[in-house]
Image (tube, rainbow, N blue to C red):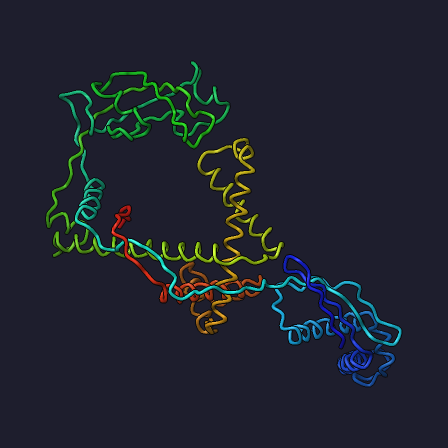
Length: 445
């Protein structure tokens, strides 16, 4: 078998294969023998029809099977001889049988990039401590108390900061109802009934609560707000919106006492406030540790992104760019941007998608290379246990779930994801970690 490979740019290679007639004839003989054993030919007992009759009757099917087998054998042989890492064999082209009975074809292969790994053990990362400070704990407990607070009506005074106002409101822009002026839905900004506003500077919109101070239940006021320049809905950024507000009720928040009774309400009988604080602290430490692990991974990815450069297969890059662009568009739509606004930012979205796609693919290849070098593998048992866990969470029949993944060709992707995670765990285990003294945002319990 004559195999020629010409490497090109962007991880492509042209494969040309010439199979000698002896190999073709041997494969053809095997296929004919197999057909002869099973074929039912009128006038002949099963298995007794002459091979010439079999070949004439099933000429097209036999030719296609010969081609399929020879192509598969050739591709496998090329992998062994050339030590190739092929991501995609492409579609074989120029299939033909030569005058002497040989067979030849060519194909464009997509190859995995050649990677020279930098030092990957002992990557320096800097992360905060996972310890929970007294202030962080108190902030979390205050949040819990607010969630379980009671509210009493205020009847003997007007609205003040830190109160809660229950309001009805509509809105207008340039004298027209907001949605009419915009020519599109405005969401919650268009108006609400029974809307609760906490009287704080940053509630609802900056400056809104300040203008309600001094009002009594039943009173009305037009509240003018200049929309911030970073507001998600671009059409009203820096516009002056007038909110026509009616105060329906004033409420005062009554926080529960921080005592054993509060702990029992949240955790059950015989629990104390110390038990509650310990549980909250443990939850915060767990969440902090997850954030810390993400920080480590992000820093290691940034390290590889700067230290390693290699060609990326164009087909993979384009597919991942599309995935990232779709995700960005979906996120923009969920934030309130309309199609016109999204289109106006198309170039910026595509630039972001391209950069993220390149980083994602580079990281995936690097981690796979590390896994191979360190003999990190995903066993069949690990894969099955992982799939069983997913099926259980989804409350699906495990056998049907796994068969569905097999039919859709998703099993290799799941195995690869597990391999990547194991490679990341290896890097985390061998990272050089420095603990920063700078405080970070408090995670939720």
